[in-house]
Image (cartoon, rainbow, N blue to C red; front, top):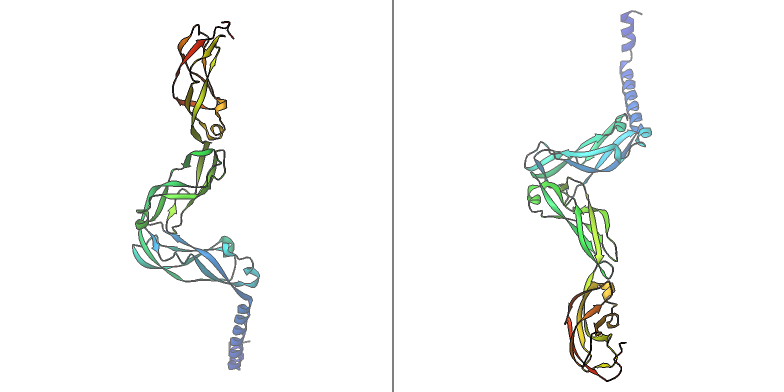
Length: 321
């Protein structure tokens, strides 16, 4: 077939052939459109601020964006929120109010999907940028509740004691400290150690060391001081034939010890006495006071350390008891 005859056959009824060609393209296009499905995913919006500025407002109420995805019906089932990452990059921006486009990163698995159409809503985010500042601030433990009765917290140690925060200059310059989540001491009798989160409610401030610290709590028995009054002093080892010719002496004591121990002590558990074995005749004698208290308690003060008494000889046998 020569060229002339071929050209004649091609151009013969060309309007009809052109219409058929266009219809074929349209049919193919609509078939492809019918094969695609649209899903919408809501994903977190990340702020990349690797330069000298950082957002101070604008995205606090826009922490998520919607990603519209069009893909083949067979492929779209393998797509999830984890397939994408949405971000704006202010690393090269300067201070002030800027319009930042929203970018979408696709995972390696998502890149294998063809065809794949993506769009973000909103497409741009208005942000106010400010100079970035960092500094170290102390971490304060937040204590809730009280230890069991008779116990107290002797120390609460946070490690690390300081963390580095990064954020807008106006916010970081005013920040004095951060607190931990509440640490309950309710009813505890023993010390403990645990990792707790740092409370950071400021969306624009980041903690470089992470969101947790280690807290070591020491619990010890609580001390108490108790006054004991009118404790009688007994005269021991008094030789036969002698009797006490003055009133029975009494003393007062101040005891110190653990609450659970000292609350139970009574005057009957305290032995106050004098050794009178060297009495040989009637008259006044001065004896050193001797005390015996429960081993868990300590005497911090006493009304006297010597006892003055008077004895009389009754004339009976002087044999010692």
